[in-house]
Image (cartoon, rainbow, N blue to C red; front, side, top):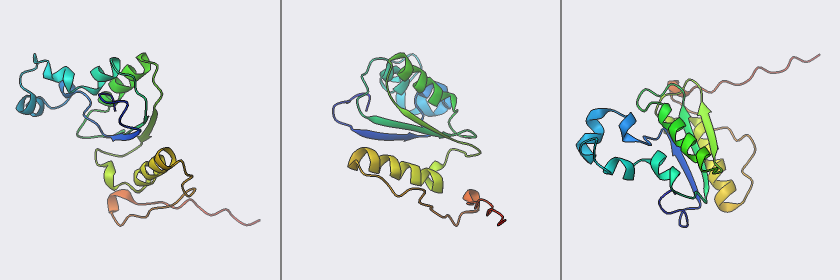
Length: 147
């Protein structure tokens, strides 16, 4: 979306490694070469955001307990987008790690975002996705006591 703003209309970035300089050292060098390489800027969403005009709708989502990619990388991208005065949306999921793809709430919010911004339609309000995973238990709110 940052490199080709006229092509992409909607995007959802979740738990993104937006700049390899803030990620595991052994990972970036394996694929991009030494840190001094200009490849890092070319692959950095934070850097691209400083030089791009974001045109589409972008949702940036992450878990606040991400154990793989430091949440600071999301904030660096957000900072760059703010410097460009770009419009974007964020979703921070508390007590979630790096694997948001199986999280029922994130799945619904991602679907809703795409339905609203690609189809221009209203998704079903409060649609509940249930998960059999013990990691993502859904907790029903307590019922109101009848008076």
